[in-house]
Image (cartoon, rainbow, N blue to C red; front, side, top):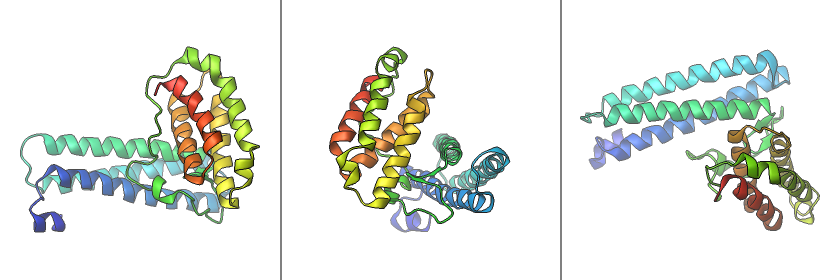
Length: 232
């Protein structure tokens, strides 16, 4: 707000967007710290540990959303745009909470397995960005019929990636991050009725990670089947 006041953009849409971005950055950072603390303490990612973490993250999201509401109300923006943006920020925080809890229940943090000694994320700047994972050409129109026809091929493509020479050539931390993410995607892909949101999110994450670490052949094959299921 101080920077906005200095350059004359305090009551602008740009400042509203920055509120949302900063809220997501802070929430993701602190939520991951909470998840790491729970795992260090309990060495489990399900049951009561996951339930307590979910409650904690829900309270954190509400508190941050309330701060966003208060901050926006002080900007002096007339009309309903401030309220609309505040509601949008609250929705984004709730979506991020759901994603992070899903990660935790799968034993994941970012694109690596949750460990007592935190894994340095090889794509840390990507997963900590306001937009989370980068878009990789996977659409939103999921087709159950196409999934039924091709999900075995997707699973086979994942297995080929996990045994590929491309993976073998990666650094240990890159190999571990890709393998962990691939196994979570495979777990969803083998289901007859997958969770569509999880399938897309983990597929997008795996393709982005594969491209980042140089697994272009394996990534292209996986992306091909995902694009057929969701549309490009």
